[in-house]
Every structure is written in structure tokens, then in C-alpha cells.
Length: 456
Image (tube, rainbow, N blue to C red; front, side, top):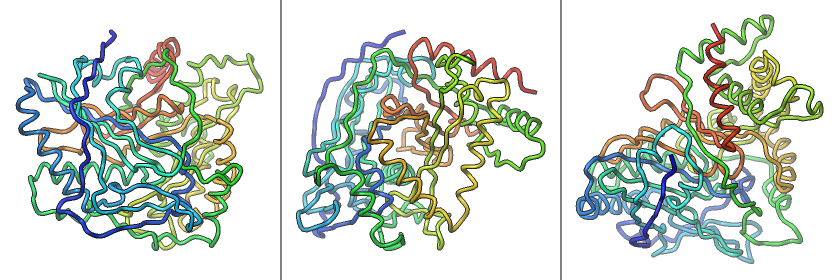
């Protein structure tokens, strides 16, 4: 089924922190932030179902509450209301907030099929783009976040966000959404937040060798350019579709038993994350037609980001706001993946990557990984990456009208990643979002379902 998604823009406004903040604010980038300096925004989309939702109720009740609570929440998240700039007198970009700065908010209305877009089935990726706002980025100035709220009459509404990855990682952006939802649901005029939702905006807690931030920054730049523009990006293939799949707690147990039987003598890190990722990598590789013997030199690159907050020495608070993640991954021969024990092969590789995350040693490994990854990304390199995490508990973002019916990471249609989230029903399973070409998705869906039947 195709959806004709006609979106009409009703309003574009700026939401400022309230009550008015007279404090000018600046925040430097750490080397963790600079790694993401040229990456494209992370685009998330939250669908909230409210049957019989009228435009009148939406415009008179829901929208004013969302705006007011956003304004209150921004008091705690002032960097989001500012901009990334690069003054001539500073060696690296800086986040500046000045009075009257704010977040761009677009209000729209769509006649698309809400249930189609918020479902799990195969959907064309282009249907989601008009529900995500553009993030303003030029040579000398970049917005931090943009938000779009879209009404689906009689069905519900969506909240789309586009966030600059150099300013905040997945945990920080999730914390912001939960904070906004908390303030809205409580109907609080008092801007206080619970401790776990109060961001720690203090770059001094991140300790790293002097000069490493400039080393990474210079790796991104060409001809001494100080431009804030992002890496060039190809247009999205109109033949791409997205779909959502789930692994139950029992499915994950079966995968664990299978890998343990194949790798009996080895001590592997077989977490839910490792098993889910390994299984999806195998299904994607096979779906893309990497037939055994067809291309003996074909390789599959996989990569994920690990949260370092509790792994640094000393560890930093989990409510630290900013990037505190680093890339990890590896390369596997495609022929090794498409064999019958492909899940075990990939799980073993992922387990080795997880061993790099020993507390206290992550900075050394991150330096090596970043030095390799930046040139790779500048050359347009792609792999099977990951956005999101079941640990974010993204389905907990309840603004007062119920938990999201569905959450999508829209931007995975531009970078070859998959997205992970906890199962909405709280059963302990994992939700997996995948973007592939139409024919590949048909094969992937068959492999994903049939493969689980073969495990004990």
C-alpha cells in the first residue's frame, strides 16, 4: 500500500527558553563531539495515536501545551536553543546561546494514512521526509535542533526532530525528549526536572590528552576551510523501503543457545545487543545477494557506537549532555557470513569489539578508531551501522496522551544503518528498523522469519 502524503505547513515559529534567560552561554566541543562534526543530522519521528483528534482540540489544547512545555524544558537545555558557530578568534567551533535565540518549530497537517506510516510493514522511505524539519546549516552557522509537529486529523500527531550530531548523542537527545514529555505531562509551570532528566552541561568532566581534539578537527578539514557545512550526500534512492521487525526474548535465547553450541570452547560476550546485531547483519548480507563464491573478495563492514559514560576512568554521570560515545566495529568476509553458522561468526567478531570497552582503556582505543574512521567517512565509506539502542527506552516519551505508537529513526535511509529500540510492549524483546531496496526487503523479511524457525 502506498500513502499519498500531502503535508501543509501551518506555522513556522521560534520557541525560546521561558522564562526569558538573560544569560549568554557558550559551550566548547570535546573531541567526542568533533568526531561527529561533519555527520548529517539524526532524524527521529514519534507517532502518537489519538483517535477522533480534531483540529480544534489539537490547536487549542495539545499544540499550546507542547509549545509551553518545550519553552520550559529549553531552560535546562540552553545549548539546544543556541547555534554552532566558529568565530575567527577561536581554534574550533563553539556553541553559543544569546538571549532571544530559540528552536525552530514547524507546525503542519498531513492527510497521509497514519496507521500505514506508524506500522511495521513495508513503507516507502520518501513518505517520511515531509514529517522531518530541515536543520539550518551554512558555512558559518548551524542550528542545533529543529522540531516539527504534524497533525493527522482524527488519527493523532507526530513529532519529528532533526538534531546536529556534533552537539548531542543518542542518550542526550533521548533525555531531552523525555524531559520535554515529562514537563508537558505534568503540566508544570515550575521548570524543575527529576534528577535523572536534569542534564549535566559541564565539559570539564571529559578528560582527554591535550591537542587530540584539534587533531581530529584538522582531519575533517580540507584546505584550512572553517566551513560548518556537512559532508556531501547523495540523494535518497526512491526505490528504498523501510520495515520494522522484532526479536522476542525467546528468539534471543534461541540465538544465544545456537552460538554457544557452535563456539563451545570460547568465552563470548553474547548480550541481547550482540545477538540481535549479528542476526540482522547476516540477514542483510544474504538479502543483498552476496552468494557464496560470487565475489570471494567481498567484505562486510559493521560498526556501532558505544556509550563511554560509565566506562571512562573516572566514570562520568549518565546524565552528561553531549557526545560521550565512540565508534567500534570490524570487517567480516561475506563468504563467512552467508554460511550456515554466519550468526556465530559475526557474534564472535562483535564479542571481540565489546572487549575493547574495558573500563579505563576506552580512550586509547577510541583514538585509534577515530583516526581510522574519519578518512573512511570522508571517502564516502559505508557499513551496516546502528542508530538507537534498546537501553534508551524511547517508548517512555509520554507527553500526556499516551506512549508513542511508533518511533522511527528516519535518517537511516541515508547511511545504511539499522535502528534498534526496546519492544513497545515491554516484553524484553528488541525492535529492529531496516531500510533496503524493495526486492532486498522481500528477501530479508523471509530470511528473518524463516531463520528463527531453524533454531531450537
